[in-house]
Structures are given as structure tokens and as C-alpha cells.
Image (tube, rainbow, N blue to C red; front, side, top):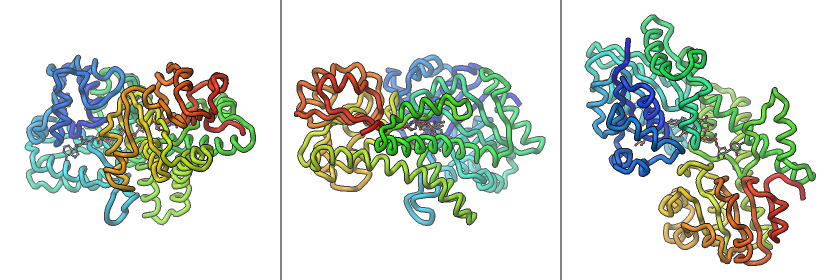
Length: 465
Ligand code: NAD
Ligand code: UGA
């Protein structure tokens, strides 16, 4: 079966970039990305392509190359479902905030709504692809909804999890380590797998397209994120030991990373991992393990989250202790709010939790992030529900100039590793700060020796006393 029309439900950080790249690489396929969120769709259609709602290096160019040609963003969900042969479901699957599994299980209500909508609208056979990250065996539920339409339409369900990382999404999509497609081992299932593999085959080398059964594919996605997050928590756990022993975590990471069995990537100690997925996906895996009574498995993975929470908390605690045990009414400048560089996404960013702890100590936080608006900062803090919106507004003030954010500050904390922070005039920042001038580098971004020469009291993560 040759695919000529694709629909993607969900125009978020995954649906938008993924479909833009498919459209760019497959000019013969009409790709329509739909969403209920009218504002988001309007932003994807903004005449100025720089205003698209997801910031990713290179994405605006990809969108510009295909938008209006074979890439369309729309709120007409039914129409796009009806005309497509292949439908990606790329909606959000957040941690449940209510009912059983609250705080752990994935909330699948959006997935179910999509499945029901597809079932209602479809008049001919379709391939439905799980692009969202889902608990293992979700395809069973999706299939059960789709197979009960009573109108004779045949559905094939594939799992095709996305492995892109934010900040490098375009690069990751253009040259993926692998594309994973899980499907049924029936002739129809294999045909569906082939149809999707042919889409990716237009730019991804064949040997990088891996096919498995549906359950392996679903579980591989959760496993990949769990392993990646585990590496960060492992090196962060060691960072605390380094601080006590005089070892330097950067040196330790380099030394172990040169062992080809360990490898050098994902060994950067930090203030803690953030992002919309690591925590959510591990909690989901913990929940699944518990639901099978696998308590040791659940506890093992939960430790990755416990360590990460500890890392964020001890960063805030260290700031308070270092500033003579009080930050009340002191100005602490935050450089960075996004959960990593090169994205405007702030979901689960460590900055939010560090700020919350410091505001509890009555600090005034002055934030500069090149891609995050003050509304976003406040909405992130409000979401925690620690205090009123007015109290957050009073304590967390955003600046569009890093020098203004740091002016008169008692301390600067680096929360995101934006390249531009290395290029700042640190002498100028020092001259305009309260003394002693403290810098807490949560990303080990700056040259400690040079910072000390300027006069800063500089602390990084995981280097000796
Ligand atoms: P997102 O919140 O940015 O986007 C999801 C979009 O789906 C939203 O715009 C929402 O309005 C829309 N939506 C929800 N229900 C809908 C419905 N019934 N009909 C139409 N639109 C609907 O989420 P995201 O970051 O793109 O993540 C999507 C999925 O991909 C999640 O399962 C996530 O775990 C997974 N994932 C995310 C990343 C990442 O880097 N963000 C990477 C790999 C996988
Ligand atoms: C991660 C995975 O890398 C992707 O493969 C996956 O598709 C995605 O989750 C997802 O499922 O959502 P992402 O969260 O966008 O991607 O970004 P990462 O580069 O993985 O970084 C996650 C967090 O870990 C960031 O806060 C980052 O600063 C932190 N990190 C990462 C470290 O602290 N140290 C490291 O060495 C690496």
C-alpha cells in the first residue's frame, strides 16, 4: 500500500517537527497536522514562520520548505482523519493527576478520545500509529475501541515511538539512530509495517528501520528514557560524593566515559534532569511494574526519580546555606529557565523547583531566558500551587537582558546551559553585583578558574570542597 495522505493528531513538540520533516522528505505525501488547540494551530500557520509555537534550531526552515505545499496545520480533525490512509496519534500522555494511579500512571484520556474519534469518522481502512509514548499494551485498548465500530472498517495498529530530543529535534529526525516500528505478525500487520517503513525509507537508511512486535516497541520507548534518565541520576549521585571527597565529577565522567562499554554521552552532572518525559515515563514504568506485583523492579527505577528530586533540592539548599543561611529579600538571578538549551519548553524544568524552594525562603528571583516568556515562568510557578499568583508575581520577575537580571544580585544561578551564557561579559556582571558575588553553576558551564580570577565565589556541581 502506498501512502499518499497522512494525518497527525496533536501539533505539539513531537507532532509538529516530526510531520514537518516527513512532509519535507516526502513531497508526494500530503501531511495534515490537526489539533484542538486553535491558538497553537494559528501559530503553526503564522505568516512569519519564526513565530511557530515550537522553538527548535532549523525547524522554521523545514516548515517553510513544505508548509502550504504538502504540509498543512488545521483544526478540522474529522476531515483530516477521513481523508488519511495513515493516522499518527501524537497527543500528550501526562502523568495522571486524579483517581487511581494518581501521580504515577499515564493519563490516557486523550489517546482514548482520539481512538473514538477515528472510529467514528473512518469510512475506509486505515493504519493507526501510536506516536505518543504509551504504557506497554495500550495498543490493545486502542484496537478494542477501533474494532467495535460495527461499520466493517479494518484498522491496523502500529507502535512507532519517537526518540527525538528537544533542542536537536530536526537533526534527530533527519538522521535518527533508529526508527522503531512495532506491528502485528499477521500478513495485514506486516503490510502496515511495510507501508510506514516505506515512508521513513525515503530518507532513513533501511538498516536503521527496526521492526518488532507491538509490545516490544511500546516497552522499548519507556526503557530508552529510563536508561537515559538513569545515567543522569547516576552521575548526579556521584557529583555529591565528588563534592565531599575532592574528586571532580567532570574528570570522573571523562575517565569512565572513555570505556567504550560505558560511552561518553549523557554523563553531564547537572542541577537535575527536566523535560516532559523522563519523570513521567519512569513513573509510568514504576506503576506498570507495581501493577504486576514487581515491587523490586518498581523500587529500582523509582530511585532514579528520588535521586533527581534530591539533586534539585540540594542545589537550592546549598544556595541558602552559602548565602549565610538566609536569602530573604535577597536578589538571586536565574540564567535560564528552559529544561535544557535550544528549546522554549519548560516542562518539569529544574529551574521551577529551585525557584519554588528559594521563594519559600522569601528570595526574589530575577530570571533571564532567551526563549521563555515571563507569562510562562509565572504559569510554571502557579502550577505548583505553592502560593498565590500575586505572591509569585512579586517574587519572580523576568528580564529581557541578562545584565539587568544580574544587576545588584547577591548570587547568580545557572539553570540552563544556553551557549550565550559563556559569552557574557562576566567582569561587567561582577562589577554590578553585591559582594561577595556568588555564582552557582548548575550546568558546569563556565570556566571556574576564570570566574575566581574575576573575584566570584564560584561553585559548580560535583567539584571538590
Ligand atoms: P504536547 O503537549 O506538546 O502536544 C500534544 C498536543 O496534542 C497538544 O497541542 C494538544 O492540544 C493536542 N491534543 C490532545 N488531545 C487531542 C485531541 N483529542 N485531538 C486533537 N489534539 C489533541 O506534547 P508532546 O511533547 O508533543 O508529546 C506528545 C507525545 O509524544 C507524548 O506521549 C510524549 O511522551 C511523546 N514524546 C515527546 C517527546 C518530546 O520531546 N516532547 C519526545 C518523544 C516522545
Ligand atoms: C529525552 C530523550 O533524550 C529522547 O530520546 C526522548 O525522545 C525524549 O526524552 C522524550 O521521550 O520526550 P529530552 O527530554 O527532549 O529528550 O532531552 P534530553 O537531552 O534527554 O535531556 C533531558 C534532561 O536531562 C534535560 O534537563 C537535560 O539537561 C538533562 N541532562 C541530559 C543532564 O542533566 N545531563 C546529561 O548528561 C544529559
